[in-house]
Length: 368
Image (cartoon, rainbow, N blue to C red):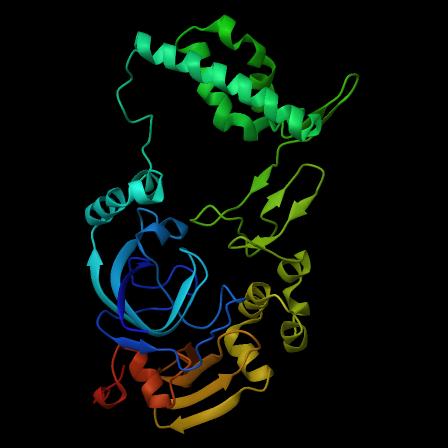
């Protein structure tokens, strides 16, 4: 395919939010083992999106770069698009992003700019609702009552008779405003019970003579994107002990988190779920897994030793083993591993890449 312009969301240090891979502006990247399998939405290649794909990973604490992509491609949807060739061109300001989002809102048919830059209703100056505002609310309520009745009849009481406690807050707060601020007590009286339930309970299934009510969770751990996440314990826990384990939104068996010593190269490689396998490797230790799983040494020179481990249906693990040029307090030189791009062929090229340089550019006279 011809080169095209897209956008890439990154952390402020130019690392990718999900793989922690650090990019360099202006450098041409090529994925030598690009995965063109359209059934794999998360695999080998460089990901980039158009403006309508930014909500998947963008928030105001991240930056967006214009990028050029080319070569082979797999485009699953507007959020998952990967390419063989990739280059960062320039940073796009938040003002420019918002402007571009507004320009295509008629096309995408929703407020994309507000999805990217949500408005905090608590920061604005409160205004007294007009007569027209109240009339529109009454019209909306009339329509909702009609739609709710017809939909309820078609899908059955089992759905509409369920209530979600604290998770109903997103729509109850709308009516609570009219109850407390506008003093429309009569109009919102039927919701009084749901208001109280949302303050103290989770989901509930009410029947004629009994009501099943769940407790609210007492532990909730999430990452910066709001996904369930905890590397050292359950991400969600309820008072009775029921829990969910997850890392960056990926649900996984609890033993991986609670007893990581049970993780072995064999059960890592027998795990069919790519995302769970990546978590297992992270808990086991990338460098330890590299050696214990029988990685192949592909290069050795005065700069270090380069290893490669091919992983089924995923990007190869390629790391360079280097030695600190400064002695430790015990007189020894500490050795450590650095993960590099899969297409790197020599240890010198790998070390150069960590400094954002090409192999022939990396010629240190003194290392510290």
